[in-house]
Amino acid sequence: MAIKIKQIAEKANVSIATVSMALNNKNGISKKTKEKIMEIVHESGYSTSLIKNDELKNKGNIQLTIYKKHSKVIADTPFFQALIEGIESKSRHNGYNLIINYMSNNLLDIEGLKASLKENEISGMLILATEMDEEDMLCFLSLDIPIVVLDAYFLGINADYVVINNVSGGYLGTRHLIECDHKKIGYLMSSYPIKNFNERYEGYLKALNERDLKANPDFIIKLAPSMEGAYEDMIKYLKDAHELPTALFADNDLIAFGAIKAFKEMGINIPKDISIVGFDDMPFCTIIDPPLSTINVNKKTFGKIAVEKLLSSMNEKLEYTSKTTLDVTLIKRNSVRNLKEV
Image 1 (cartoon, rainbow, N blue to C red):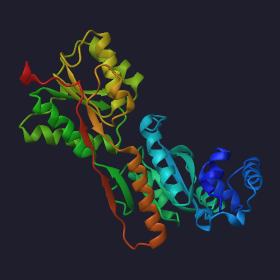
Image 2 (cartoon, rainbow, N blue to C red):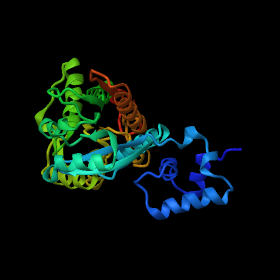
Image 3 (tube, rainbow, N blue to C red):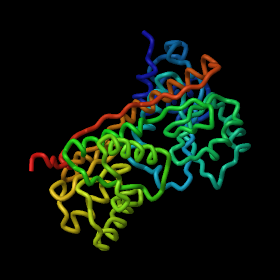
């Protein structure tokens, strides 16, 4: 009976892709790991020829390039961890090894990148463009491999995109606050603007306009896009004794978490005194007191769709590009007070 590649991976405590690379004598894994895998194969009494051929095939490598312009939004958070997990899982399932590469605008070397892609036998690339602008993206158009751009869309560049429906998220969160009879609705805005946040603000404005409500500039509060940074900025804002709205929509959950911490420290109750809706549905949303109403993004599905799109471009040599948008959903928890019930 043929041994399964999955069994080898479990015994060696490595991924299926790593086992496949070892059995196919591919680069990308250490000599020690390869020796460990081959030892397990031979100790089991099998030769590599007995392993199912369809499981042996390592079709190649794809690269996830994570572009950091200022590193204020892309960080080691549950959102990006889940996204990468979805990308890695889908890549491995389709027989591809995932290589992750970090790049920054001040160290951008396209010729060096081309050499690296060739050396590592990269067949296609995913670009996490959260912190990119259009000018940054132009540098990547000279690459001669298929690419898919994640988490940002540039009107002036024809490419394959997979993005989140940010406008819908901003709209749904704000509409929920309106349906709970809030009329003074503010916005917790990142002090580091990115395209995603701009689109969420667009959705916020759309929901207000539909109900003939105006966005009060005094209720647009700019905070750092991290929990600690948002907390510190909100404390300063509150100490200046600004008037507060009855509800707030936040660019992301981290900003909401920081603001909530500051509100509590200053004796402001959530949701009795002020309601908040976040964006991303991070795991901490269910732990924080009160649990945070937010916009859910299926992060793993986001990553899997991106890989599917890249593989389609690699295998079918499509003559057109397309934009795939992942819809979002509103998750209602206890951080919003319904004023109709007062």
